[in-house]
Length: 204
Ligand SMILES: CC(C)(COP(=O)(O)OP(=O)(O)OC[C@H]1O[C@@H](n2cnc3c(N)ncnc32)[C@H](O)[C@@H]1OP(=O)(O)O)[C@@H](O)C(=O)NCCC(=O)NCCS
Image (cartoon, rainbow, N blue to C red; front, side, top):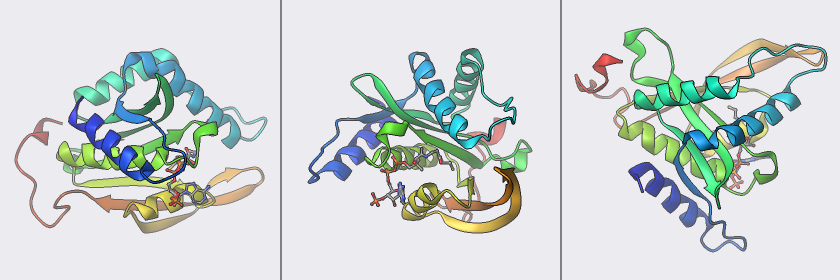
């Protein structure tokens, strides 16, 4: 078991300790065999979020996801899944926040939990594991954008120490109305209180 897997598994079991429905899921790095399940989760969320008649060209093919996953992991960018008996319950990953080298210590994350597995602590365990894995990789800040209507995600991130850094009014248009987007962030490790080490991220 890798450090990431251990962190996720320990947190998951800590969080489930004492609750009636102790879930045996664990968090580990994603592998190629997880891709179909991850895509199914993603497609379901995207289908629910897209209005009828509007084409969405952003849904990846399995080969895209395979390449992206490998590329991220090669660059020490965590790409994690929560699994129970070989079934993928959800996944979470980070990409560079921006491509310019000055931003190399900041990452942007995404998380998706299987529809029928929400509200069982999977999102919290995955996010905790992602935060630990990003800190261990030397990143200093995690950033994400959340639709202002997404109460579940806003509450999850608030619980895990993310702060609201800004509001982007009317950044999205769906179902006949404009929606705001919330910019959230959280520091990792020493955050911006100390300079970063010259290595190991200088080659990113
Ligand atoms: C947001 C999401 C990741 C939450 O995952 P989850 O596994 O259901 O969350 P958990 O069960 O671990 O809940 C952890 C905390 O999140 C918050 N939360 C989760 N779902 C919530 C809901 N429906 N309403 C309010 N708060 C909620 C709570 O603070 C909860 O802590 P609590 O159980 O002590 O109240 C999940 O709903 C999801 O995948 N949504 C669709 C995709 C998405 O929005 N991704 C984030 C984009 S930035």
